[in-house]
Image (cartoon, rainbow, N blue to C red; front, side, top):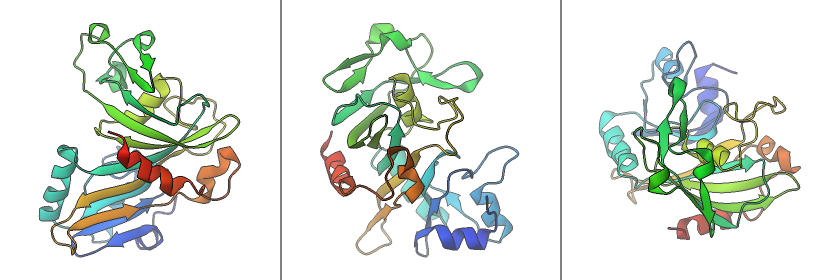
Length: 255
């Protein structure tokens, strides 16, 4: 992984103004806070630039990450994530072919042994009805649980894999990864759930982000980071499918 901040910053730039910096993060580098690991905030600081992460994406996840350059903008933007008004969209390649055209994972999360995120119910208690995965309250584990909601649209189907566009309404740690894996649709290459070692990366990508930004005219921030060509490799594609923009529009209609 190239850790020269000036080169990484220039190559990954999505948008920038006096208050924010948006980058297209490559898979394999942390945003911040990973022990014994280089991260973007640390690299920027070593080069004399102070950045405040507005949100987090996992080290194994590629794509859009937004930083604030000043605390006032950071507060305005993070409040939208806390209030669940930030509009987020991800892409994932999953090892399954049985998903409907649209659906929702309405599955609360909990934290199990070794601080691992899991569904807050036994796996066999997960039910599916009309494109909705859920558990009954009576099946919830006695530990504390956190309501978690993920909407999805099927973008492309292959012989063994499916590409999904996903909108995590809540923003829990590992939410998309756990929702997909525990319902039998693990993300290809996910080190938490795919132990085959057959893939060089995790096929989860932070794709789009829209927020209100009072200092801009008009007062909005609409960001997109298209996946690199290697993202489509499990389906034998070399470029994004034409239906990708349509999937984004459809994702907004699901509530």
